Amino acid sequence: MSAADSLNPNSPPAAPTSERVADATSVVEPQIRVDPQQAAAPHTNRKEVRPLWVTWFAHPFANWFWFYFGFVAALSGSNMKYPGSGPVVIVGWLTAHLVNVKHPLGEIKLLLASAGIGYVLDGIITLMGVLKFHEPSYWGWPIPLWMVMMWPNFAATLNSSMKWLRGRYQMGAFMGAIAGPFSYYGGVKWGSVDIGLGWSFWGAMIVIGIEWALAMPLLLWLSAKWVPGPQTSEKGPLIDANLR
Image 1 (cartoon, helix red, strand yellow):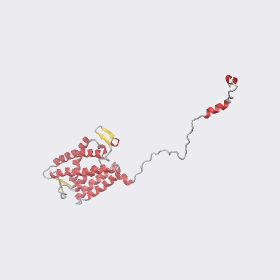
Image 2: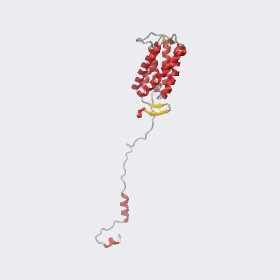
Image 3: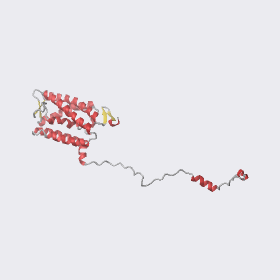
Image 4: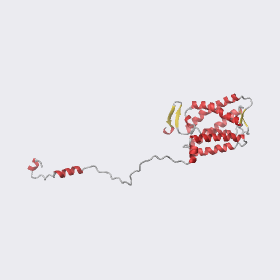
């Protein structure tokens, strides 16, 4: 008690020191009650377990295997007088491919467009006499169905095993000019297609190289347009199309 309080008879008696300390310490922030049953479980990163048959088509190595399997099936089917076997195999693996891709609608557009591009370009060089097929012409156009199906068979690799080519149009044109003639040369050696009369081997390979040097950048552009994914350029990776 202070001196002023002791002289004032009307002032209330002061609380003991111990009670004042208890009152000061009792004023604390309210505590939040946490129910242990409602506590959030710790986040754990669990790797997605996918069926084995899915990985057979989704993995880039599997993608390249099925592309090559379809390529061989088409050539061998034509050589053994079963030209319909190749398209059946290709349609089968492409169906499984579409089940596993993230953007099936864009892939379908790409596959159909590639078939149309191949139908026109291979038809033109066949009319020029560069190629000669053993099968009769279809719908008035001189290339068989198995040859048309080779194009979507290859286009299915552009967003999987060949996705490193996305946006690299100059590299794509160079690879098309080199790898395209080698593929047709494989068909010639397999006996599924012949070089037309009046054309030398190297002359035919040059024309095919020009065809694929034009077709590859177009296919890459359509792939980047319809199927979102990480974009690249001649200088390296750019930006994910999903973020634009």
